Length: 217
Image 1 (cartoon, rainbow, N blue to C red):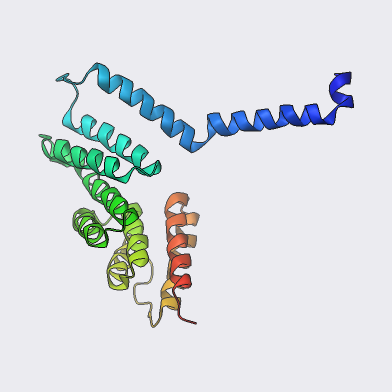
Image 2: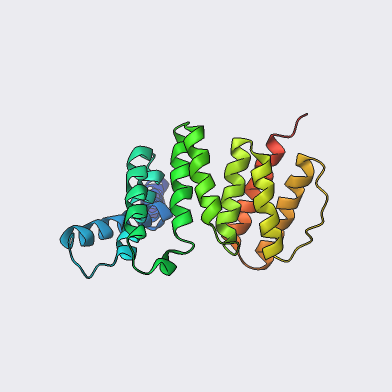
């Protein structure tokens, strides 16, 4: 103890090592990586097991796709998402895929967007938009943000109206400019935060921020 008290640089080394361990073991990225490893191990052991339902396989493919997306491996991610869509479509109970399939199209759109394939991204987002149930505010907000990033304000407005109806907010708000729309998403974010929907609130605020960034000087 006396040694460490007299040598602050050694205490700093211990502190740095502890910080690094916390970052490595407790961050979202590390937990996701570990979860992917677990799924890979389980799925590799039972590749042809009949007791693995199509919906479960689709979830595994989706998770692997998200891991690739997080790692910037867009082509590989698209392959996993496409596989998930194929498997999900073979499920006897299509009701369990309600609200799930749109997410696969959304993530595929994100991959295409990352790769600069605007046309393909629009098609994927369009499918997500078509299939998304109105009550899935998280996907509606994600689509709003994606459309803003693409400069498609009309499509963003379409989903914004759905969000307002679902949240029972004033749907008669007049939107004369991008600034008005930005402020509206900021208000939506505050409302969602009051409802303790923090992930959705962050999406709304990110959309507001991106709208502000494209307002002409």
